[in-house]
Picture 1 (cartoon, rainbow, N blue to C red):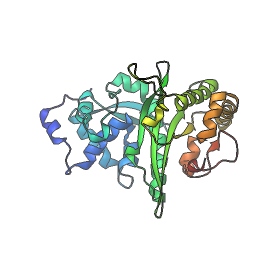
Picture 2: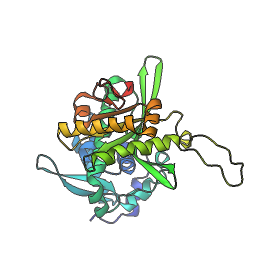
Picture 3: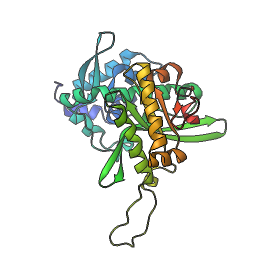
Picture 4: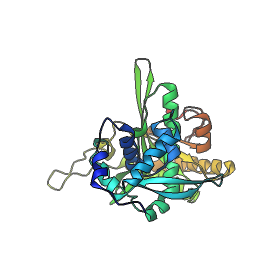
Length: 304
């Protein structure tokens, strides 16, 4: 249990140039839902020490704005995942960066424990893109990766992308803006259910905005154009199993791309790729680790 918030703490944590890291930590937790101390360090202070970020997190917890849930690391050491309390979520609700975002879903220990594995893996998938951008001189930072983005796909249904990535590749005077839907697979669902996600993205690609009843029944164009000038590429990131099993799941994605009519329609217009998370972390997302779902040799995600 975290201590109750105080009015003094809220005043101290109001946006101020004097304490940018504290504000950045709150914003990162509001946007990314949950993160470990190490992930926040890589995200916000990649050249800094873990202790600096840890100190800020514990001060925020003492003020009642963050809390933590324990988790078991792979080396059997104990670590924690941090999330905002309801008071922390309220404090960040009106930040310009977060306007228009849905209500924050993780504000209790129970919700945190249920969402920890997937949420932390989605955050983990973001970090290599940010590191790659820093190394290459491209533009992609903590706020260019938005988790849990919902889109209507017709019949009252919604598609919720695990994340939407915004990235600007810079080559001298040339700037290339890239966007991608991210689907993170921890091998917790069947391979067929994973492949069916391709159909949902194809439905989003084909879904058209419906005119209001008072207007003439004319087509108003694809609904996705409300948010994107170009339909984002679709990237599947897989982890949580042996390489053989993950490779088989990528093969199943390729089969769905080839065999399902509307998935094939999507593939003719939108770059589709899949990669193993550990390969992305080892070599970087700009390395040829992405398997095109339409076939061909592995390549960088931006070259699909």
